[in-house]
Image (cartoon, rainbow over all chains, first blue to last red; front, side):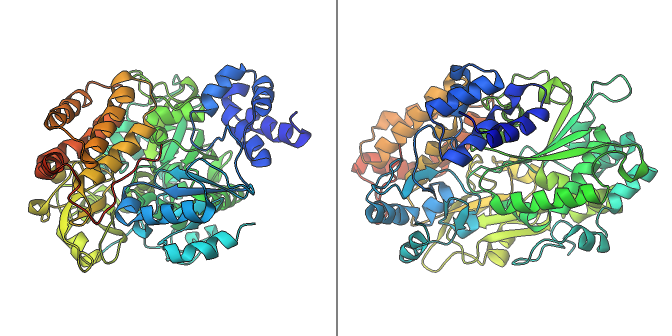
Length: 154
Length: 433
C-alpha cells in the first residue's frame, strides 16, 4: 500500500505532466527511496495509482539501471567499470571488494549491509578509479583506502 | 586568454550565489534580450556566432532553433531541455559547469527558451551528479525568487518555468529523442525522425534539447556579440571549448581553451604529458564513441573539421588516452561491453550485433581467437555503421572498433597467433555479467 506521504509526493509529480502515467518513473523513485527497491507489490500499487498495467510499468522499471527490482542491501556500492577507470586499474579495487565483502557483482552481503553493482561511467574520469556508495562519490581510489571507506557505512 | 565559461568557477569553493553572480555581470543577457531583442534576433545572433552543439554532434545551434515553429499559430507549450545526462565513458566536462556555476546554465536556458518562445524547461540530469543536483535546485529557487523564472519575467510578459529531472541511469537518455521518452515516463528508446523534436518533441509539442556547455555559451554571445565569439577560436571554429584528458597522464583534468588548440598542447601543457614509465599509443578524442587517433595526429587542432578530416570526431572534446601498458584488445573490449550493455534493444543490429562483437573480442583477449574473427569484426563495423541502425549508438560503438582494427591490427593478430594476451602484466578484462 502506498502511504499517504507517498501519494502526496506522487500527486505533485502527476500535477506537472499531461497524464498520470507520465509520472511513473518519478513515482517509482519515490517508492524506492522509502523501501530501497521496487517489490512486485510496490510495482502493482504504483501501476494502479498512475493508471498503467503492471506489465507496462515493469517494462519501464526494468529498463533503467537504477530502479532495483530485487532487494538491495542498506548501502549500494556502484563501482565504475568504464574505460578511464579500466585504464587506471579499477579491477584491483573490484577484486579487493569481492574479497572484503565476500560477494560478487549483483550480490548482497550476508548481513544485508552492502550490495555491489558495476556501473557505467560515473563522470569523474579525471579522478579514476571511482565508486559511489549511496550518495557519496569516492575518487582516485586505492585498495588501501577501502577499509576506511567501508567502515563509514553500518 | 579569455575563459568566459569557467571564469567564475573556483575549484573547491561553492558556486556563486545569484547575488554574487549578478555582481559579476550575471543575468545581464536576460535583461538585454527581454528589453532589446526579438526571439528571431536572438536566433539570428546565435546562428551568426557559429556556435556548434557541444554535446558531440556539432550542429549549428541557431540553425537547430530555426526549425521550431514560431508565431501565434505555433503549438504551445514549447519546451526547452538542457541535456545534462553526460553518461558517455570518458566524458566529464559538463559536470564542471553544473557544479561550478549553475546560474550560468540557468541564464543560458532562459536565453534559449526566449529564442524559441518556450514556456517550460527541464534540466535532465544524470543520477550520479549529486552535487550538481543540489546546486541546481538551489539556483533554480534563487532565480524564481529574483524574478528570472516564473510569470512575466522582468515585466516583459515572457513566462518560463524550470524543473530539475534526475534520470535513473541509462546511456540512451543522452540521445535527444530517447531523453524525451524518459521525460515522458517511458523506456528511453529513440524515436523515428521525422518528425523532429523541434516540431513534435516532448508530449508532442515543439522542443529543443541542447547540451549544457552549448547553453552556457549563450549569455556570453548575447553580451559580447557573434564576432567576439568567433574570434575566441584559433581556427575556423568559433568559441572556447572545454577539453578534458583522462588516462595515464600526469595531471588529468578539464580546461577551457580556445577551439582549435592542438592535441599536443592539451596533452603536454595542460595534462602534463604521460606518467613516467608509460608511452602514448593512441587516444579517443571525444569520448568512447569516437575513432582512435595516434601519434601522427598529435599536432592536429581540436576543432570539428580538423578531427573529422583525420577520420574521427571531436565529440565532447574529452580525450581518453591509451598507453603502451594497456592491451588494445582489452581496451576495445571494455568499450564494446559498455555499448552492448547500454543498447536499448530496440533495433536488431544493435541488440544482437554488439553482444556478438563483445563475445568475439573476449575470445580474442583470452587467446581463443581465430583469424576469421577479424573478418567478422570488420563485417560488424560495416553493418552496425551509419544507416543500418535506428539511432547512433551502434555506429558510435563501431568508431573505436574500426579504428582499433586499423591502427592496432597487429595487436589483435598477435593475440590470435600466440593464443594469449601479450600484455601479461594486465589481467584480461572480465565483463561483469
